Length: 596
Figure 1 (cartoon, rainbow, N blue to C red):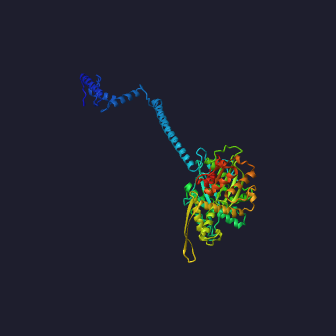
Figure 2 (spheres, rainbow, N blue to C red):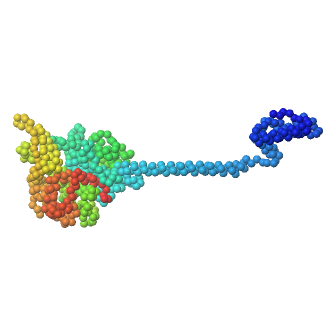
């Protein structure tokens, strides 16, 4: 460091030159030298005073860097008015546009990311919404605010489609077929191609619709009540009760209660299986009087958002019992729905026809006005024959014969066993009710076995005791021929005795029937005589019902129709669904859409 000043002018000049040179070199090398500069003083001043004035006038300090020198020079120029500050002008012209570009870029980038995320979330929402609709029986392409459109009259309009009605209820539709012996239930969502049969708690595809309501005791339903049918006279059959004439108010309420109990128990189990929720707790008599079906389960606790469809027997041309049956049925089940008018009712022949269309069992139908189908429903306790016009789903004619049914086969089997084992002529002569119940149970199993075999073995140990109080066991074989012969005997002696006015159900052109084929011939002839329909204009004869599973019944129908219109007609027009479909076609058709 240089800390001295020279008083000699020549020495000062030389020293100044050296210092400037060294300073320049230091600036070029980006160094930070510390120095003290002394200008040459005036001639009049002495060396010391001149040096002090020079340093004071320049206001230079020690230890300054090139940056500080440049800043000091700029400040000096500014004080002299040579330059002006330009910081704000630069910010407005250059900084603000740059900031605007940055903000705009960031905004665009994050807006795009937000749009992409919103689009992904919307697609995910639509996918979940579609899954929800499919799960709850809604049309995936239909809006959620579908208005309910049901008939106030309670009877289903056969010309109206069911697609909109199904979409209204998140739980789809549930068809309930209350037969004379069993109750069957089928369920369908709007997306289902075909309805499904709902099994009961024991895994059966049908449940006996018997009920026992002892005073002050628990209600007994289903198989347990059916097992006491011939032991306890208080066992009730709801379908037959609805067909009975109008009783007093107390008796009518008892019938309604029995019907509600049977349907509530079976339907609640089916709803819990199909919709996957347990509501209302265990079955109780009080629960059967509460709503089970509703439009909105949120506003109706312990209910299911499903539409009930009830089947009922066809109107009879010879009586008004069906009209009374339908009104009684509507009254009995009205409390099971909230509101009550969401329930629909469909005649069994129409439901069977829809089921046949669903499974393409009648390919000859072309949708013309002059087409006809005969539906023969061989039920557990009765048989009905109906003439239906498929295009309009109108029933042109219908008649019902009681006690000509699948039960006839069981009665024939029991009668034969009693004759062989007890040497009695009829079941009514047997006073042992427990033994009678066991005979009917064994005969039911034997008839089911004879539907696939020509012979069945019956084994009932300890059926009774002899005079010495020793147990007696029943073990014998039974063939189809024996059961058929016994059934024809019952028809000729007992079944036709219950027909008080044969002219209304049977044709007067034929003699009194003596067997199943002649009975079928007389029934069909009466149909053609009443409707003036040419037999050869009929497009098909559809046979359904649990009794139709027996080859004995099908053989009798085939022979009876062949005697009237010939074998070729039967071969082309007689349709008998295979397997379980023959007895499930009605309930499956009721649960399906009419727009087939």
